[in-house]
Amino acid sequence: MFTGLIEELGTIKRKVPRPNGLALEIEATAVLDGTKIGDSIAVDGICLTVTAMTKSGFTADAVHETIRATSLQTLRVGSAVQLERAMPANGRFGGHFVSGHIDGTARFLSRRPDGEAMEYRFEADDWSKYCIPKGSIAINGTSLTLQHVGNDAITISLIPHSRQVTTFDRLQTGALVNIECDLMAKHLYHFTQKDPKTDWSAFLGGEA
Image 1 (cartoon, helix red, strand yellow):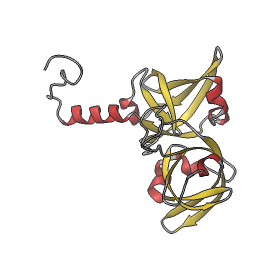
Image 2 (cartoon, one colour):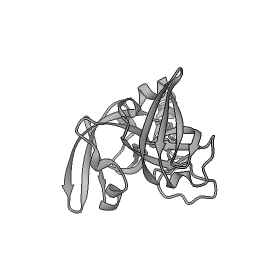
Image 3 (cartoon, helix red, strand yellow):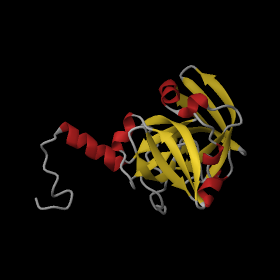
Image 4 (spheres, rainbow, N blue to C red):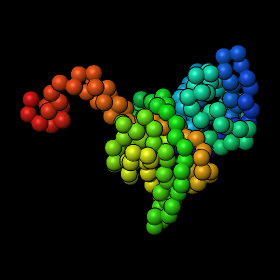
């Protein structure tokens, strides 16, 4: 489990083909502290298992399905990636519950200044049915609040600090990003679709 608060930006140093997928060698510093082989690190929001460690980074494997279903297919040697270690049970929780299991991808459409903040628009896809304005979403592993949800696009906003510690300002138009929708929204959607006759009034705060 992750929080969506990015700890540092790493760099893809090598991409090594494997029979079952790809091994990624990632240069990093902060996320190495306390990390051991077998631990989970979110790489651009994708939960990957550490398979090897060095003084300057770590290696994680990605299977073919993960590569096809995420932005890993577009990463190149030298690409910056957002990194977060899994949250310890006694850790401080600051973002929202992020599993590291990607629901889909989206194309970056545009950005525009909004005072000191910057708004970013992303192409909506089937996963957008889980999105509501002011709800939570993780884009490339970053915990964000949805500003606007339309039929064709979603909009989020970043303050200057968040822009400095993430890769959002490096996105080029058309760039692919990883999307993970809010866990609660997905569960509620699933339950209501499976049994639309369920009375949710007690759960939602009304009378049973």
